[in-house]
Length: 445
Ligand SMILES: Cc1ncc(COP(=O)(O)O)c(C=O)c1O
Image (cartoon, rainbow, N blue to C red; front, side):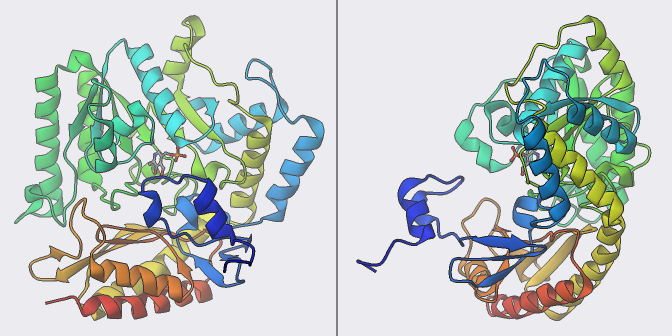
């Protein structure tokens, strides 16, 4: 290799830093072009994008309608600061108010998910005059100090002690949590909610600004509470005057077969919703925080103490409008529901067939398989916050070798393809997984 030009991977490794890993351990796939559910590396090898990159390229790669909208917008205005009113900003916010849950009709535009969460928490604290935010241990809400503390994921432990006003609560992890052992999911949800209510009392309801919860749990393993859990969360919020912030950064925009993950629970009425990812499918960075009419009214007469130079970026807003048009014109929410059923069916079959496939969770095109060494004892393949075991590493290598790109974490394989996926492509992904799980089976007792 000495005299040949360095590869894209080598140059990336030499001159850039990457996230969440020691740099020597970074062994990336390159991408030189992408279309629909596929992308190609610098050796022209094709990969099925089984994770929609970071669960954000919902409409698939290279959609010409969005590409054109961005090009058209840059010809008109490439930038306007957030104090200037623009057409794409108004139009996107109007469109969002049509699809958002409950009475959320006003939007503050940000750049991504992390800053949407920071702003959601700030807005809740300003509007309520209270300090504390309750969030789950097994959750992820972003990478800055406040958002990383809010996510109880152990990625935040290097950030300790983080911000002091976050309180973590336990999770509806019915497959593993002791709260659910020997109980039905509904009974476990009730017990968990009782303990959460106790925690509210211990922390002083008068101090609690908001609960911050993912509308549908994502990178923490798709650990979703049921109807009982969500109804109780809403009741606790109502009883103690606590605001409900729903993080739809990952679960929004059709991912779960509804516009938003929280739409699966019609009794839940969020006061604030944070969005990003599928809002533009990553074509241009953009995030959004939507607020209820009551919160919007509060800020009619009170200053909104925040701002971002690139907030409400015209290119991001144009990409957002075009994305919403694609979701609607191509019935992608419906396709997510339909293809999600097919995916779930196939994943259930894999769980039946493979001793290493312990559990499958999710809905729509938002699924995870949890790998175990033993189905009876549920001994995990890697374990909480452990490096990938040899078995998981071999699974990862097999998926990659077979041309499937997704992310693995601890015991989990994420199955979250773009919403434009079709039956044949679902079958292609399932057959690759089937082969990789065969390798994991060798690590079972
Ligand atoms: C639920 C959730 N919230 C917030 C974030 C942070 O979003 P971003 O990486 O765009 O800052 C993520 C990212 O994966 C997420 O999954």
